[in-house]
Image (cartoon, rainbow, N blue to C red):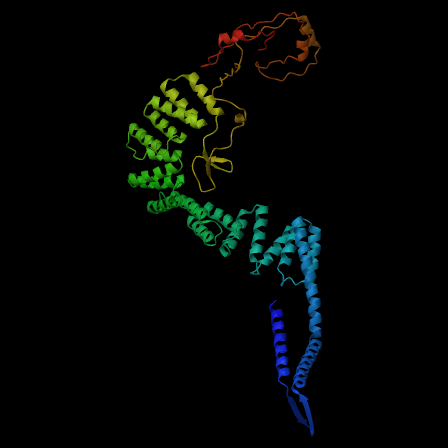
Length: 525
């Protein structure tokens, strides 16, 4: 657009010049070689412009003829390069689609048309084609060759890292990831693998530096970086608790400052403060964390902040936590445990039942069973509560990849309920009556009476016999369906010789319930 405007301006200026000359007539006299030439000013101007234009055209023709070999070669070179890039593009698409044969064909075609040192993607296409063909050794050689090129070094490290992961060589994979992270910490795959390696070796300072590099390159957000720093500082504080309490305290306090709602950081900081007799500051840290998210480890440390406290004092501290977070199941559970230790059974029972109403889970029923055992010792009610605990959802715990741990560790542990039991897939309600399961005694007290009926004896004698296994006296001979079918309808039922012995602490079957049941013709013991 600018060129068009410049051209129009030049034409307009040239037209104004000729108009100006036309309004001012004059003559031009030129004497050359004894001759005198006289022309008008307008004709002279037109002649000069024509001569200049002719000179420019002649110069352009001469220059074009002089540069024609280079122009022709450049045309063919550009055409060749375009064909090479087309082959490279087709090969990359084929590699992404999993067509190894086409990827190899196009890689060879691209290598003939484009020099590999000018286009590094040819090396990548060759490596991808080798992987698709199953030539992993050749692919590794190509990735190793990329390490010599600064532009391709990270790509080579990535390929070698994936190959090491495929072979299960964790040490080699972490080595390549560490080299890549040292050059480019913004690479997520390299940073995550290196961070895992550093945390596994307990190199908390190195892990903190890597997180800081990730934050500076804006690979992760500020909040996520602060959370990671809090986790690493908490792990560092736990590792230095015995060897360097002061450094552990500084790390734990910094972690708590970065993430006040992170329970392990609050517990670590408060525990170190309690060991240095700073109960007030440690209690404030736990109270702030409890307000953000109640956690049983916070409650345990808070109630036992002073080892010399009586059980009543611990109960009062538990009630203080409950005031900070009302209508919460964990608060009620904390008060219930402290009340149980203080032998305040009414308070313990009330709070445990309140916890069940707010969050029906396994721990609440187990706590209520402990209260029942300590107060009344009623084994029937205790078994009923234990059966409900088995069917209730599990309590939250530190879970990582399906593994449940009693203690937190900086390996992606999350505070949540573990996987439900298979039995919980069956819908059950806490108000349903529990059906006692009667187990058969190891050996009957008296041998059962034999059914003496001709039809049954004939059917059993005609049935094919199988070799009896060599077992003890407890082996029971199975009765076939044919034997039952041969029994006439008017056969009399046979009652057992005597009642089975009840198991210890088994309430048995209510006689009223037994009377309501319809009688059966035959009973098999």
